[in-house]
Amino acid sequence: MPGAIADASVRADSPPGPRAGRWRRRAITAVFLAPAAFFVIVWLVYPTVQTVIRSFFDRSGSQFVWFDNYRSLFTSDTLLTAIKNNAIWVGVVPALVTAIGLIFAVLTERVRWSVAFKIAVFMPMAISLFAAGVIWHLMLERDPQQGAVNAAIKVARDALRSPGVLTAAAPSTPALEGSIEQGFVLKTPLVAGQTALLGLTAIPPDEVPKGARQAATPQPVTGAITGTVWRDFKPGGGTPGVVEPGELGLPGVTVELRNAAGTPVASTTSADDGSFEFADVKPGSYRAGVGSKTFSAPFEGVSWLGPKLITPAVMIAYIWVWAGFAMVVIAAGLAAISREVLEAARTDGATDWQVFRRVTVPMLAPVLSVVFITMLINVLKVFDIVLSVAPGSSQDDANVIALAMWRTSFGGVNDFGLGSAIAVFLFVLVIPVLALNVRRFRREI
Image 1: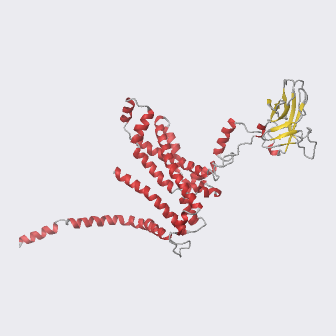
Image 2 (image 1 turned 30 degrees about the vertical axis):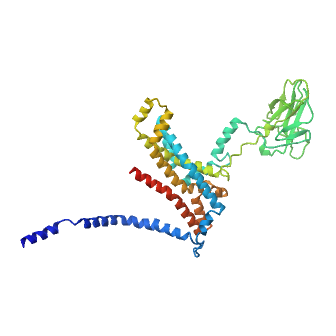
Image 3 (image 1 turned 60 degrees about the vertical axis):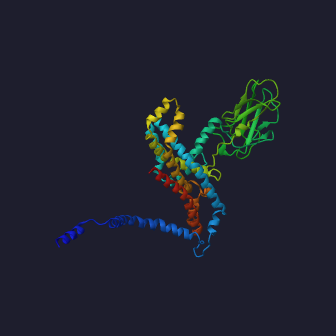
């Protein structure tokens, strides 16, 4: 009897068996995972399943249409443009962002102000993509007076090629012949000691060059050909071909002197009163005229936000934002590389380029793959920066799958069946990239 009591007490104090312990651990795990599982089901699983089901119904959701919505994906011109643009994004942006981030990360190791440079490059990540898109929309305005990009292009273009002082004009009398493409030339030949009157009209008052003064009546000069080029228009009437009070000279006009064969032999620029002079003219007959350089149209800006360039413009804005992310991640991987390996390669006679290509890049391959796959996922679902950069007139040309889904469902069309089909299609495209990312994580672990 005492032995039985002892055995019973031992059994009561002994720990639970393996099966009971396993169920207890599972119960504790379930208690901790239950809140997260609840929100995953509510916010992820249920919407996903409901979206798949909704994609098989029509606009109103009352009629089952089978695969009609998915058929529309590949028959609608707007949706085909979105798919094509997304393919361009996938093929260009991840590679460029990774390459630019790698270049920045390597170069910043060699400069003293690397911290300031990294801050400047990474700073766009501090703002939303929509805000970045608004910034780039303003920068890409076509008017050089408003868009910073076209303003910079204008400065560079004007440094290489001076713009003309006039955009267009017409002869005020039949004595001048020609066009703004070829220039206007006097019909009557001149010799040294004569004057040339080059009257132009059809020039709006706001296009008269700054600094213009009362046109001067040309005076003959021995051994020279003198003349005046002016705006031959007098308010209230006047005599064409005659310099009159109230008529302004045209400064900065390119005036050419041509020989009998029509070849320019001399060139000058008119003064503020429109006067010009060709001194020491050799004997012979000449024809004076206004050169075509006078009518070089000013730079009006590149249409970055137009249908042809809107997709590259949005890509540039997107790369500007994400280049800092790629640089920081790659720089962290670069800092982890053993310097002894790099020094050993240099000791063996490798150049900097060989060290970079055959040592640095292969050792950074895991980090580069992280950046590349991350960007691949991001560009597949790019949306807000396209919406903010592209104006309404060119959104169809810049369309991408995520934007097409939003516009179809919530942008006024209100076709939730087709919008759900676009969402499912996008989800299917992202799955292989996610699987690749998960596989890479498992391999590293």
